Image (cartoon, protein in one colour):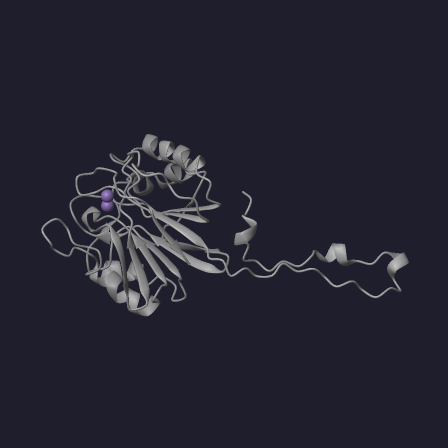
Length: 248
Ligand code: MN
Ligand code: MN
């Protein structure tokens, strides 16, 4: 995929091969090497989550990195994952990052098969990727509730997962929210993860993207981090919320 020239952050020198002198030029003064100056333009992130195999009501905006914070499936079948990859294939973003959510059973039950179906995104599961010097980390786990994929008990088991997040992470992607931030369900209760909230004080990412709690879609800035609950579906599983764009 071609990068937009106005978005080119990299500093690239002409390849060494092109600077080699021919024998006729050997005595001549070396020509200056052209460089592409680093642009101050942002890396545009387009964040969405919780599509649940539904067609989003809003178009997906263009950007450099598409971030999908889990719950791509409704029922949790391999067929849904294949269909989601076809949806990704038609989107223009030069990087696409995906984590699983509690509905995305195949990534838990038949991980090899599920991952093999994702050809148009990088799947992150307690792993990271560096894009233009920005460090991303993705993890699907959430506090135990009902019988769902990627559940873990609150306390030590979740704390161990969050301990894997590198301290220099710029963009954290989890399926569920941290406790107290965009994590209220319909009755006003906070259901986010306390252990994730504790890990944030160590990691202090620039951006934290999640979903899972459909009712708390939105953006909040707190303690130097921008938090995005990017749930596409609302509390009634209607795919009405727009993706959230963030320039890093
Ligand atoms: Mn969901
Ligand atoms: Mn969920």
